[in-house]
Image (cartoon, rainbow, N blue to C red):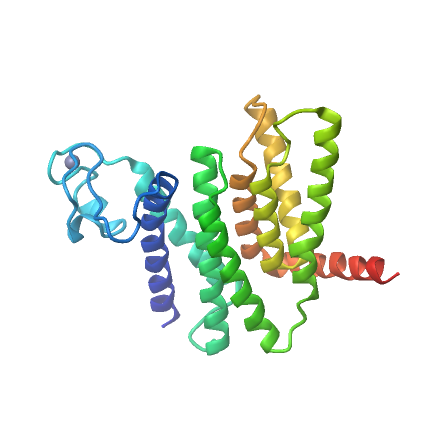
Amino acid sequence: MNVFLYIMIFIAGTVFGSFFSLAVYRLPRREDITHVRSHCTSCNHKLELIDLIPVFSYIFLRGRCRYCKEKIRSRYILLEIFSGLVFLLIAFALKINYSSTIYEFINLFLIYLFVVMLFIIGGIDKEQKIIHQGTLLYGFIVSIVYVIFHAVRGEDFLDNIIGGILISIIMLTVNALLKNILKENELPVGFGDILYIAVIGFFFGFGLQVLSIIIALFMVALVMILKKQKEAPFGFYLSISSAIVIIGISYLEPISEVINSSVFELLLA
Ligand SMILES: [Zn+2]
């Protein structure tokens, strides 16, 4: 019976996936994401429900618009399948099954709401090179709910506070110093990136935040070397690394505990 649960989770992921394409396209253009109906990007025909079912519509319509027969870009269905898989992997990582408690399901749901922010901020940063502030605010609210939810159950949240504040203060200080030294307007790490790191730190806690920053920096370095680029959208890679951290949580949690406790010792010393 677990198979049925996993199919439902995968479908939920694909529904979010089709919402991500829409949000990444519309949010930076200040377009409505909930009330305005989707339309074909080549013939502008309003899309009906039958055209909008994730994955299924694409297969059923054989990858073409029902009205103008123009090819639908395959990136839409790929993103839907990809986000379905990410949702599924997270459920596996948290060992969700039919006998999971209501607490575990709420926890999973809150993590999915956080992953929505990772996808949208990552997508907009990749396309537009900006950290979308409205989505960041949404992610911050989700993080507050998530931290309170765990705190109510008696879990410690000091590492969340440290993750949300400490790294941001350090980065803001380094940025201010660099600005004076380099006398450049373009800083290596933008203000939006710092806010994004703060929200991720508040959600994850300090240890996992450090791990996701390290993974993101590693990917940025790799991309810049391999593609011979001078810069890379840090927010996009931070989204990917954060998703990796959630999926690999059972392996990364012990490392994060070590980082957390050494920082506590350092602060108390
Ligand atoms: Zn069309």
